[in-house]
Length: 340
Image (cartoon, rainbow, N blue to C red; front, side, top):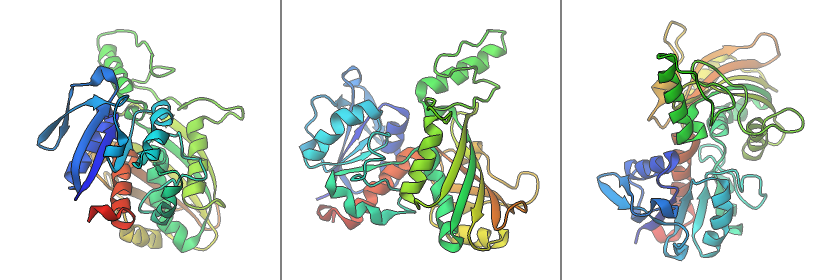
């Protein structure tokens, strides 16, 4: 018998991607159920060549499925996730609700699949923040080789990271500027079209935003608590695809040629690094791809054992939906014996 899977938030950006990726990767699902709020009940949700009818999350019996992929926001995860887990369903949650819970594994399968051994404590596994996921995929193989001491990262995060309404706002503002309509920010604190905004999530007392704090805390939990990391997270006027400029300081010597060779062999990484015009990957080119792309690999001469790299990934895929499905695949392969 195959695994039965529910997708919570099936009508949202990430929920739709989860359904797409479950189909694309031929996940061994005997049944897939699309769940959303009551206002979406009866809507169609595409699943490969099939069309699923959306069912109500509020009344769904999670004891009838083996895995639930949650992507409906932290409030929904906190309300329904623990109950689903207690019903015997393994919850893979895409929100920030459980990431820092010491009894909940925070997992990127290319980086720390072994942490999944602890999933049964709560029957919940957390997906990291989208900007963290692609970062640690690139950092892991370099850390294994030369041990990372410190990371400084500046992100260039697309509108889709803020949801469907944010994408709509970028589109409407961009179109409106050409006909002299004054942009009216709603989802973003300032105009997003033809602009960049150094503010993602709420501000904290020390001046960091929660997005910046997440990158630090999650990298430590996933990769190594000894790594020092500071982030500046910026929203940019692209629809899909996050980019990151990453400066890394290592304990041991490593040069750009070594790094390039290591990353070429690393799971989930794709190196595109030609020192010529266009010899690198930009967000437009990563859309729809599974890989985390790494370009602009070069030595930082201002510190001992330093490198700079450019990291790009589809935030709706590796940053969210793909990572969740990969977690499910790893659980099925290693821990859920039912799925033979």
